[in-house]
Amino acid sequence: MGGRRRRAVGHPLAWDAYTRLLARHGRAAEAFTVMLLLLLLPPPHADDWALATALVDVAAVAGRDEEAAAATPPAARR
Image 1 (cartoon, rainbow, N blue to C red):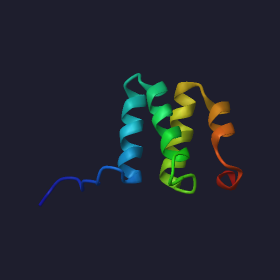
Image 2 (cartoon, one colour):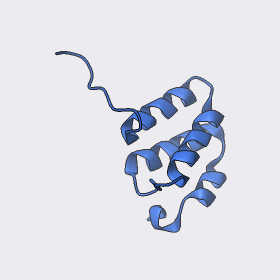
Image 3 (cartoon, rainbow, N blue to C red):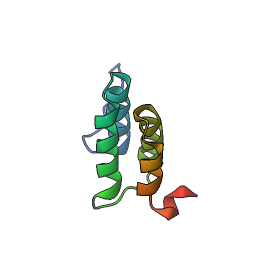
């Protein structure tokens, strides 16, 4: 079977790809909101590197760096 591997819905790398796609197509504010919800709602995913990296990238495009920094738990900022 050729082609890309598919990720299950809810997989961190699937969310990473989805939010980056939104940001690339002018919907960075929506992507940022999705990332915040994923990182803050139970179970918290703040230690998930893929989601944290996507949040930083999407926040930069959305112009919401300060908000991202404030919403990220201190343990995830190492």
